[in-house]
Amino acid sequence: MPSVKIRSRQFEGRCAKHKGYNPAVEGAGGVGNCARCQLLFEIWQASLELNRLIRRFDPRFDDLKRPQPIEPETDPRQLSLIAE
Image (tube, rainbow, N blue to C red):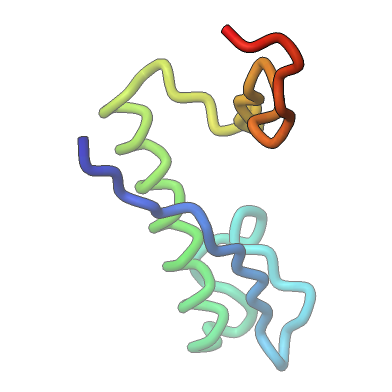
């Protein structure tokens, strides 16, 4: 089954003029209708839409839990003293 890797990038964007701008709190207008603040708002909105679509595609998907690595029962590098 093909998989799509989407959430591997972490984005920490900030407007150079308005470092305290938070799109979730301050909304679309930003600070003085700044173009960079508006772009941050659009990025934030797109991330919300992406999360909504992923949950609609797979309602059981939980992105808050970290995937647990699958560990083999025995280390494949370890030789067995008792051959089977």
